[in-house]
Each structure stands twice: as structure tokens, then as C-alpha cells.
Length: 260
Image 1 (cartoon, helix red, strand yellow):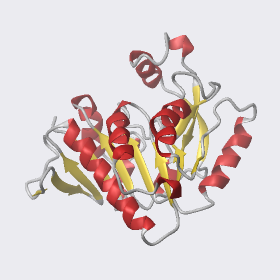
Image 2 (image 1 turned 90 degrees about the vertical axis):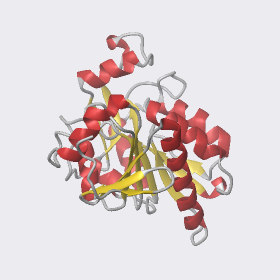
Image 3 (image 1 turned 30 degrees about the vertical axis):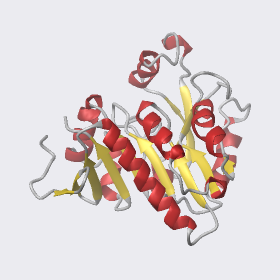
């Protein structure tokens, strides 16, 4: 692994090093990665709730988050009734019961299991998508964002901030974007849609500045299939060509990866 420096540190589970401002934690196995990330999130939320009334968390979806979320919601010691949730993205034009809906994914895996104070969903089937962007922006800005949990796409995207639409200086906090063909195909390959024609061409996404608002960012990129994206993220230039590279400028961010 070329991006592993010689001066890394080792704790009980992970080798830890920094790339610019970003902390990177390297694990031998996926289960160790997801469990440790969940425990780090648990301790962070416990500490927050010891000194403030509520905590606000943004969650991601996708295969990289399944084990992490399953572990997190089963950990004890978090008062979920004081947690307010948001999420990163949603397809335009599908309802909350669609098998590929991110609302459905998070409702089944998180909301129904922990009964939080609130879960603010992006309404993908709204008849007024621009008004929905305004509504969600106001909700996001109504309190500090304490924690954002996310993954890295195969082309380095964060949420649906693809290289073609990512803007590190974006004036918006949520926007509508057209999805790249590689992302559309990925959704078919994962079995979420029958064919490319069935995949929505557009989606809502929180923007890069919205993600970077979070006081703590945990980014999970388990699996060898993410190796090329992670290598570009850590070794390439910090640019929209690899949107995830922006995390190298965020001292509050931690990346969780496995060896290539």
C-alpha cells in the first residue's frame, strides 16, 4: 500500500496515520473496521450528550454502512431519544416504500430500531423539488451538525457529489444533480433496480460544504473494491476530480480503510 507512511501508529485494532489534516485508520478485517467505527461514534455521542441536550447526526446508506449501522444501533449507552437524524441523499421521483429508497433503508435499519427524537428525511417524491431543497436546508441550518457518517463511491464521490457536479465552494447545502453512468450501473449491479432504464437519472444530495459543516466526520471505505478510489483520495490532488479528497482538508475527519 503506497500511501501507508513509515511513521504510522498502532493501537489495539488499527494502524493510524495522517494524510494532510485527515486521520486514517487501517484495519485487517471489515468486521474490525465497522465495529471500531461504531464504538468511536458511540463514545463521541455519549460525550456530547453528557454536556448538551441533543446531538445531530447525518447518516449515509449503501453497502459500506450496513454492518456499521447494525453495530451502532445495538450498542448500549446512547440515549437515542435525544438524537436528531438527517441523511445524505435520495433519488428524485421514488417514494419512501421503494426498495431502493434511502428513506426506507434508514427507516428500517435505524429509525424503527432506536426511536430517535426526530429523523428528517429528504422527500424524494416531492412535487416541488426546489422547495424541498429549501425546506431541508433550513432544517440543516437550524442547529449544529455534530456527526456525519458517510462512505466513498467507486469514483470518489461523497453522497451524490460526483466528479462532474462536485463543488468545494458550493453555495448550496442540498441540490439536485444528474447521476453519472457509472453510478447508475452500480445501482443495477447491487440489485436495487432491474435495469438502467429503471434507475432515476437525478437525485438530491447534500453538498460538499454541507458535509464539511459537521463537527466530526467518520468516513468508511471497507473492501478491496474501494482501493482505487481510496488511493486517488489519499495520493492524488485535492480536487473535484476525486470529491472525497476534500476530507484531507478536514481535521475533524477520520477515514476507515482496509489494506489493498
